[in-house]
Length: 312
Image 1 (spheres, rainbow, N blue to C red):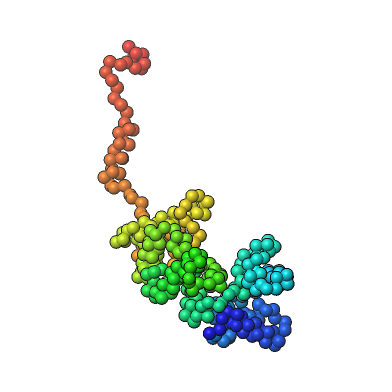
Image 2 (cartoon, rainbow, N blue to C red):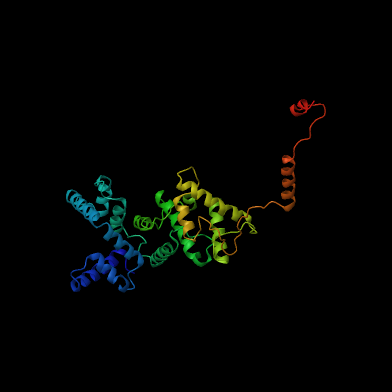
């Protein structure tokens, strides 16, 4: 099984060959032309990493030069050791994304990184994110049960790694997962347990009904109330008001095709609120009151008017 370093070499060689035939093309243009015809051994993860290298090209050159300079002064250090030493003193123009990408190309793969199963699951996670927009595979997702268990294991191994306990997790794996914006804290990163439970319920509702517009008379009305609350919190979020809504929650709901603003015409299966009309009985009573108010009050006995005084 090829590791990322070997895969990147395969990609670079294919681009070089293509550029010899098309010298007017840039690396990016050549890569776009040949990426779908690369050997099956080149995984989506390697392609993603190579694209990241193209995006951070100038920054990676700055990092590589700094690492080479440091290694001349400290020839006993590896590239990774030199990078760890100088990464915090790099110019401010060098982004964190460029640092992560550079570390991915030199990271230590000695322990378990060539494991075929890990790389297979990693590639599945890339595809899952492409479709859903995030890496938070729900535990009750029957279609991706193995991937959900793998994601949970990565989070558990990450905690062991941080505590210096024995684990199959490595810095390179962490870097590769970071490149996908992997959430190491899992459910805590997106809110409380209750929110995630309702989110999982909504996934199941959409699977059965084909949409996320839970009607008010739905048997599990807690889900309907929750959906309504998300729309209210969404408005607060973009008004910069205090809210429990986060960008990650928005991304996760967007991945389900969630409608933030309901249209006047309800979707199939949803129930719209209607304004109450006055009953005919109430309407008649209000008309009677109006007529009474228009009648003149009768003259009281014993009170003379100016006109009656003149006729005397």
